[in-house]
Length: 381
Image (cartoon, rainbow, N blue to C red; front, side, top):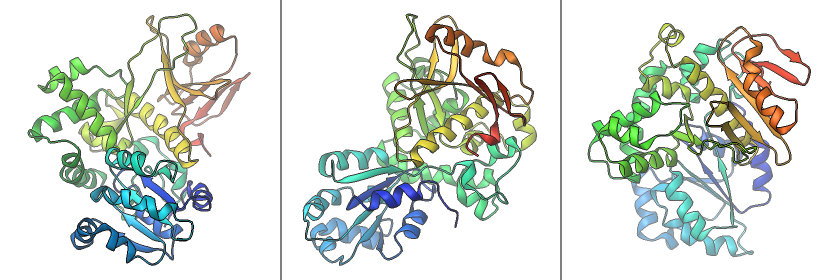
């Protein structure tokens, strides 16, 4: 059982809130983390039809039968029960704590916002950061890291990532996506999902997506919302500060897991990945997702953006600290080139600063004044 980076924050949140809602993709470790952290809590899994039916038939009776603090797993199966938790949580004489977990952000968030606003702490439990895997388990080669992704079961059981992710995708379509939206044409949805994979790191263009997938523009938008709600994809918004220049307003799209991304691109081995035309975009996706996970593990909303103007100047990743911006360029090459800082230097002139980081596929750490070159495996080490 691996130690998660979010464990200290989870313990802190549990000391302040009677209810914690843990959401994230399937197989990201939510249940394992909940059971490890809250060892003495009762446990109910709503994937079990008998338990689910009891909760749906008489939610008040079901909750009154729980005498101690409890973990309610796969809460998206019975989102109605969230409404009945409000009274219990507001009762100061009732000492019970409730840990809710689920893999469907949209359904849970709607019920939570209606019934438990201000009463629960919502935490995202995402696939593992690289530094959460023990040294003896994680890969020291970037291509293996990209291909295997970051779902713990693949590492725990030494599974073939292509086979496991194939099953994962089938389960996702059958159990999650159909609960969010009614998909009549599964072949069209599969085609759309692979088209999204082929546009990783690019600006979202619904007109192009809908045309290539043979679906309507509104359907393309609805399906992307569903992919975000079920933690397959996320979008990175452009930074709003324009420095008196016209900037791009469309977001860019990424995947939570590069293993799944490689599977959707039909990359089955290291040789295919090394020569794949999207290898640079896959590496960029990995770096962006590592930063996203870092902030989720601190219990924070990730202040991540990209910057791009209409003249082609672009910064891959911008971290907005409120009073300052971290500018990050991402390059998959193993050999550093000073031109990697070209766009960072251009933007630095506009904001009258001199900083920046380049994360690359090489091994050496380099300092160039106030700018740094960081190897891919030293991001959070």
